[in-house]
Image (cartoon, rainbow over all chains, first blue to last red):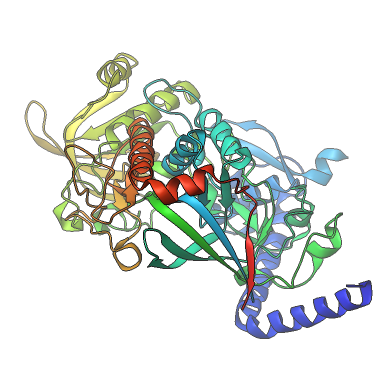
Length: 100
Length: 449
């Protein structure tokens, strides 16, 4: 199969998948939008130095269990770093701030 | 659609510790084995555990070499992300129809570099981390997964194509579809494992709605070096807990859940976790609320006594209810059965439910293998050949047959492999034909329907 045929096959397959999975794609898009809005608030609250989960939750008005989940997801993908401790809590900081 | 056909001596269903051990024991005797696992990686529940009792050896250090041995054994043909759909007798053998689900990744090209995973924009609860952390719609299942290949979850994919752009070897393949596979096997070993009591099973224990009431497998992840937080933290706010309680028999010996049996492992895993927590959090108070402590195995009683000596508090009691205060600290209402019997409410930072083992799979519709009253596979000859089922040539191993620990699962897998080998020898003609003929593991017939 040459490159042109391969590209055509890929386009057809993607079109078919978009049709077959229209509902799940729409649901995932809605979830992504929700996550992006959450992350925007989270990132704003995390600016300005190391913070614990309760401090981020208080600054953002977001629930602390969800803050923890998102901070851990961001940490896994190198967007957040664990930088220290404050009593019983670890402190986290945006990776770009740590690098500065 | 192309259909692949493979002839082997034995099919092993399930790639957890029992399935891997049965496969290796058969393959080492020269039998050709097909191992079918429905998840994208082998390893089962054991690969997610922290350490084993009573030796406190690292689980990953025991499981990973076996996973690797399975993947590289010349007599084992491994099929991951594959499910058995139908099965039919075929004159002394079984024709097992399977479907290999599409990964949307060319496994021949994928190097497991995870660049696709980093490019994917959506975060989803990671089942390997018991939902405590996230993974992406396309990901390598976990760091020691076998095969170390990415898999795309089409039901949570945006079809945005970012993974395709990020992949340095052009391994993303949206043209893939389900692949039919027929395995002809003369013997089958069922190693389909177990599930645990759902965390939301008991309304009295918060019905899964209390963040700081977790189950034993979640604690395993918190204790594992590849865990979701890389520390033991409570899920409501990331606090390092100062006071941790275990509730024993939270799903076993409980008629209200329809589970009358003892799950056999919960006492020991709770004691093990308590000891590991004592190491990870030396200042924390750890309490185990128990009805009885059952330490039946070799070295288990000494392990329990060591835990007591380390200062872990064992309280003979029954927990009636768990609620939480305004700071989401679990409040345990407990009937203490020591000295003067009394009811108390005790506050902890984190509560762990020692959930029990439930059957994971009903083998009746596909294999015609009966189940016992407890829902696990029924042994046809429980006293003389526990792995034998009522179906000729079909054997069972590990927790598919009932609650048991890792040691017993491995022993039973060895027994199932021995029974299967003896069966193959007794039904000599075909078995010898398969094992002795120069059929290479890669021999397949492509039958185009």
